[in-house]
Length: 437
Ligand code: GDP
Ligand code: MG
Image (tube, rainbow, N blue to C red; front, side):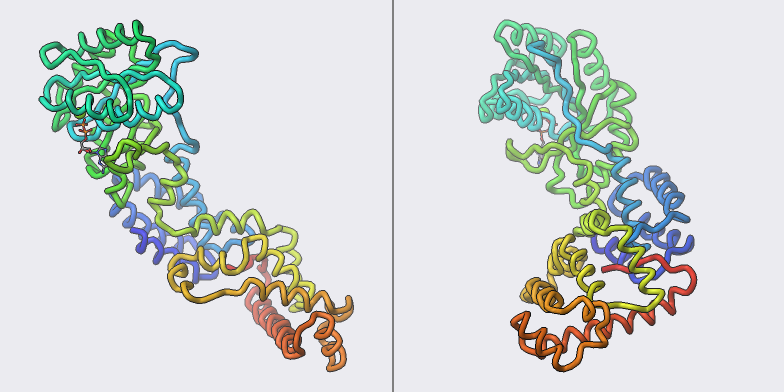
């Protein structure tokens, strides 16, 4: 996926302006990429539509080229879909007991996740209790006991001869007597959606005061996860979702679909079999993961924050007049510095990271250049043409560099000016959009 999307955006990046046809063509590729990532078809369709509607006809921000602008919109829409902020499992205030019921298909990771979660609550100073309500799988109770012990959380069991509702009730009573303030119910799954399973979960909810119902889904099941989530939400009503095995799922499309289809927040993600491998869910990170665009996204953010609109406007004016002097040069370098220097900028371009290895991009070059410009007089900076041989000698001495360096810089400013001339020709009447970096 990552490579695919990189190609899409590479193509977009190299184009000058964004027409409706450009957006459409790019979105076709994005669509294919998302489907390949196992994002639900309906979700993809509505997503593409939203982005298209927003992208066509929208002003391209200063400092962004049209391709980057599309990435920005794709990113924003995807984040909106994922939920814009990190969400916590809601707990009852004070010392009231919060009952959390875990639901999900067999093998989704309920038992493991119960223990992971209990371990995290314990670390936060809560007093959790695990309750073994899965009486169908012979090894399920033992598994919860073993995991509970590993994280140092007590496990309440009544063997496999009682029904899950009675166990849940007794578990809550046990918690009340023993001062536990969080009760986590590990329930039984089935291989497929099944009326018995749903009935059992509903019965538990009717008999104990479940505060949060958390659905556990396996990211590797892809498309199936969407149907599962929908069924559970319709029949049992869930409050949030934990997506497990994201360490194995290189795609992450399931997470996006589940969120879109149920409208319920993703709370945590399971990143491995070990009991510490449970992480808070950050929508923006998941967005980047699904888009897989290296750090293109942060490149955009940097550009947005650093480029001053006024400066960009001024630059456009200059471009139209095809003038470029050392003051402009300084300004340009200043903007680059704000964005983290040349090497950090380059390394964020997808595909560049690896190529940069072994090549030492010298950010101190910029400092040296600045030193030379600072050694010039006001007139020299504004009017590079007047810099003759004797002025060059003086500037070189002032900056403490060989005269060749000053020559190089003068040539560079001349080249830039030449480029401006050509660009202003291309800009015609419209003008205004600065290219990439
Ligand atoms: P349950 O049937 O829903 O209770 O699922 P289990 O908790 O027994 O987990 C099923 C399998 O998935 C076990 O082998 C777990 O170790 C594994 N598992 C659970 N969560 C994760 C995860 O986040 N990453 C990986 N790689 N494996 C997981
Ligand atoms: Mg289990």
